[in-house]
Image (cartoon, rainbow, N blue to C red; front, side):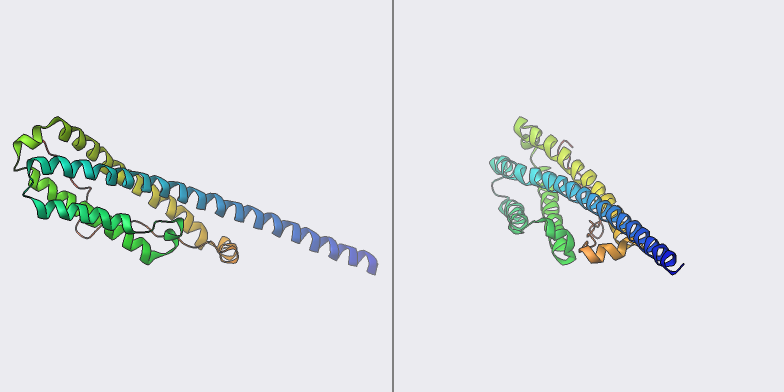
Length: 201
């Protein structure tokens, strides 16, 4: 009788350990999958920001050809691009809200400098008619739109991941295995929409 009870207790313990192990395995794999999705979306955000940065030297050179004396505005764009390029961007930035904020502020500074450059362009009809400039305009417009889309997708992915990290019981495994919450992109103060990049007016 005592032996049967002992075997029954052992069976219950084994079953509980198996259930717990399967639960831990499923939760861990779910967290890994969600984390990988966030990192993939982050890579897309980086790609579109890099594309914008790559367009800027040609844009500045083209504007300079028509408006060389607009040095302050041209230098602001170049300096903002350099500041963005000086920030070390690694996947770990997603776990560091202060560094993520610094990255976002640098990108917002570049967006502001480009907006001021667009205002300058309005004073130069010949520049607005230049074929090379029109091509750059189209590429920049498309890139700004992609930035908005990719940031939105990143935020959605980060929200799904963060929800998993915070909900019980996955939050226990998240802490145990070192899964940390990810930062979000937030709109810059006063910016309700993507900057307008239209040189054709």
